[in-house]
Image (tube, rainbow, N blue to C red; front, side, top):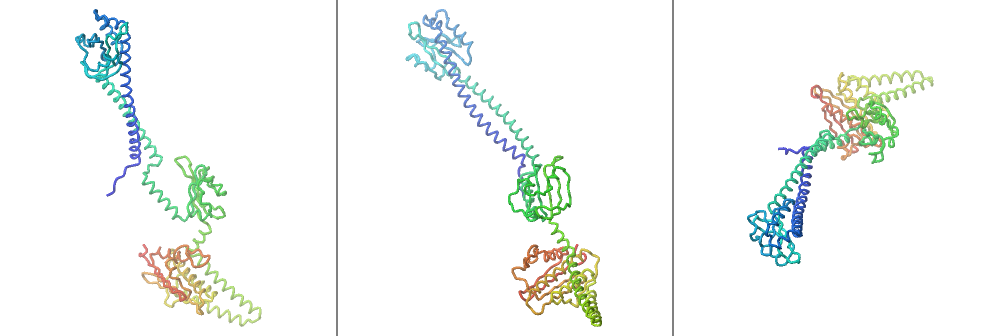
Length: 533
């Protein structure tokens, strides 16, 4: 069961939301802590200031010194009480703790309650304390009251109830929380919009898909035999593969980011970038390489953002085309025939110049008979004209090399209109004979012979080539059919790899038996008809 992964958009939204949430809550916590502490200090400062104002109001101290016969203190305190904020009570008492003012009129004249007034009565201290009075728990400021003779005649208490402080604290927390939630909402919306933007910039791909695409791209670049070179809109190289490195002989391993004309002065990619027009199958000389290139602009909508070129080595393409189609094999066969024919003409010309006309006639009759016998021996067994022409040409080449070639008397191959099979047979037979001839030529044996057998049946075509050459080393048997591998100095190693490809394309099989310094036998079996579908 595949575990469902979150999309990139969801991951970004969640991540940013978590970051915003953590930031907001940590910030909100610090702000709340600061605001609550500030509230406490503000309340303490406020009640102490009010208490100081009352203590320094001369009319109040004069009235208290006279025991306030006209209840002047209550009116004065009520007036002050109505003009201040965050104060729940102002109480003025004498030294006997008797109240001269109180928010509840019935409690005026009663004793002060709380138990925290001893310091102001005994020592005349000014301070703030917290205690429970008749109105409940409160934070209160104590300030002593003095008469004109500087004698303490009582004290004033200004207080704020704890529930009032709690309400203010709760209101602060609520306000900050609402602000934080609003900030969180904005952060989540921003995260969503940002994730959408990033997703659009990435063309809707998920990270896993991008990783897969990158791996596929690297694999494709390595597998493609064509060279690839890309530039961005600033004409800087953004991409090239190993094939481009080989074809263009790139020695600098770090050309990414460099201007393409600095590395390849004859590059035409900048022209494609400017014109926006694609070019196909254009021949070009580039970095001493003769290439056949396709160049196309890279577009983002209507905007050109770069250009890319794919190219092949034209010389290699021509060579491969000749080998794949069998043209090379036929041309070599014709060349060998032409060379042999010219040698015979030279002999005839020499005999005529010597005046030995009869000997020239006999020579012509003799070589004609031999040629007819050779042609008849091949064409009677091999009715495919292309393959027959190839073998006849190879016979001439074998004679040049001093190697005997033997066509098995049981060989037979019918003519066919199938171009694919004909070309495959030319490629297979031509390369096998050529390899056998070269291996035999290297041998020091007196008898140098190559045997060829082609046998066609209703279901398959069997090709057997045996030689008395130098053989194949055991460690090379597994690699001999690989492209690029060759035991011959200067060889491209394409002959046997083309044989392998042709055989595989026809669902055939190859069997190699070889002993060093004894010889090699290669057997190819090709399936016919519907077996190849």
